Picture: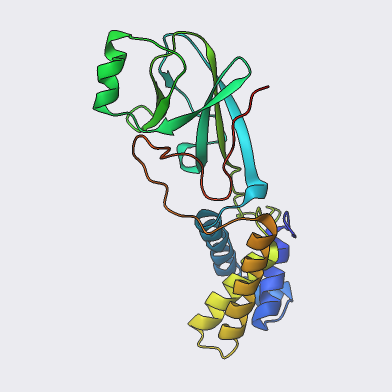
Length: 231
């Protein structure tokens, strides 16, 4: 998988796929548009599919009596796939969503504490996340999520996903705009390459992540479940 390919090379590859001259001087007027579509194509592919090779874990120290925490600097809410409470050497999966019924058991406003922490939720009003119940003992919160995308703005910026995949999808879109006869062929090649990459990783097309409490609502996106183990 050719990841880490610089934007300048991807633009050159895209020109070749489109049948344009690869001479940089001949493509000055179209460079910015090509860069934009390449960047947006990578973002769409990143959002629509699971990429197990991008999975990373981040750990946050949790303190007794504290229920609001900052997200890891490189892992915002949008890329998190699952969360676990770690106490000692044991990981307990945390469900997403905190209900009013939960507060009838342990009321955060009354500083009612218990371990293990069982649930979490995003707090857009605070720009943080909340855990429930308030921990009575210190522990750790482990998030698993996708590594962030590269910006693909400057010529030297490297792609995060497979460059051939990005270039083929972009070429198919631009050729379709031009009503080119080559558009269906490029779209077919792009689709086949995507299927191959996902198959090699055991990934699936991403299903909606149901935001709501209970029943493992946030137990990881398809194909990347993390099974807590002792030790």
